[in-house]
Image (cartoon, rainbow, N blue to C red; front, top):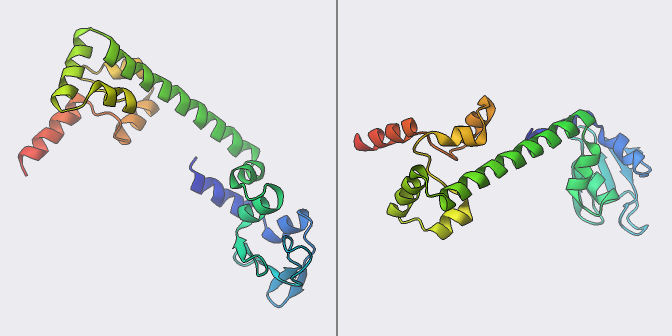
Amino acid sequence: MQKREIFKEVQERYNIKDVAEELGIRLHRVGRSWRANSPKGNGDGKDAFAIYEETNTWYDFMTQQGGDIVDLYAMMKYDGDKGKAIQELMPEETRETVKKQISARETFMNDIELFSKKMLNDNTPIAVKSRNYLHSRGITDETIKALKIGFDVSGELESLIGTRRARKFFTLSQGLFLTTTEIAQNHDTRKHH
């Protein structure tokens, strides 16, 4: 689940007026908006704080700050830390999905680290061939190590990082690795231009 999707889910899940009241902001209706004293204006700014339910947004004319539900929650509870605010506001099922994604990403990055180390440290024919290819392209061992890059000429990468379809799709679709078939196709495409 992407950050954008999480923010959208939170925006759709909560009404900003209800959130503001839960945060202790005492609102009253003024025209099409809800108003209150500025919650961060040290008691000044009568009616300077406005909630706009149509857009699920707020603005504090005293502090010249505004935003959405996450911004309001962050300002009131976490000194502006949106990360903490979104963690608290997101539904439990979304929180679990995010935890699984983080775990999968960490596993994937560990696999990449293994591949990169193997390519740099092994003297197997595949590792030597891969290093030689990268060196022929002007890529140093320091760059290989820093960027955790490699060149998989044998398809060994798939067995190293696992064969689950999702991982293969992720690596290939993100352009992290190219299969030998893709390299050949790219090479053929460049010849024809």
